[in-house]
Structure formats: C-alpha cells, structure tokens
Image (cartoon, rainbow, N blue to C red; front, side):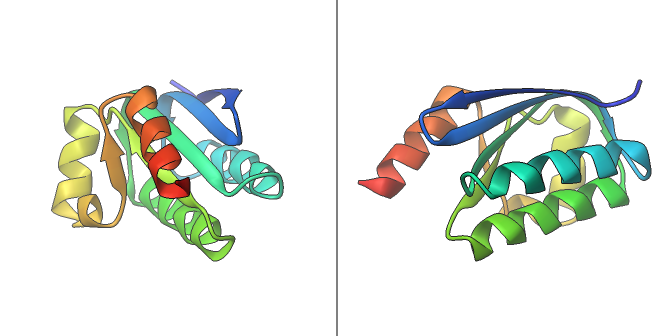
Amino acid sequence: MALKVETRISGDVFILQCEGRIVFGDESAALRDRVRHMLSGTPKIIVNLERVDHIDSAGLGTLVGLWISAKNRGGELMLVSPNKHVNDVLRRTNLDNVFKLYGSDDEALAAFQKHVA
C-alpha cells in the first residue's frame, strides 16, 4: 500500500497521520517533502505511525533526516504509536534511543507543552 499522509494542526504543532509503508521511493520522498515544507512554519512535528505496516532503511533514513532538520530549527520530531514491526525496527537500529516515542498524539502534544513551559 502506498503511503497516505493526513495532516492536522494543534496549536503550533503539525500532526501527521501516516498509513501504508514508509519505504524507498515515492513514499519516503513524499513524507520528506511534506515535513520539510511544514518545518518552515513550525519545527514541532508529530508523526503518528499507528497505521504504518512497514518501514525500510530508506524510511528510517527519512525520519532521521527530518528529525535532524527539526532539531536544527530548535524543534523536535516525535513518533507516536509505532506498531510491533516498526517498533522492532527502531529497537534493532537503536533509533528508539534517538526518537521520543509516545503512545498517543495527546501524550506527544503534552510533551511539547511541557517543553515550552
């Protein structure tokens, strides 16, 4: 399944609901382009992975690159609800120690609020 991304805004935080696969090719490129465009408005991004059924090394590279871009702008890219497969990949690559992982969009939003306070 190709990657579908729905976007909503909560305050100054962009929330992306991803569905499908984040893999080499159009999927990773589409996600990268969407987030980079948003970073010009706010460096606070939540990527909800609940409906992502597969991620490959290119997808991981895209997430890391976007995380770095957000950090360089004084923000953060947080991941929400990775399924077992995605969570296993993050753990095997030690990226679970890089990304902040949350169980829901609300938890991640609350973390952004604490960060500001």
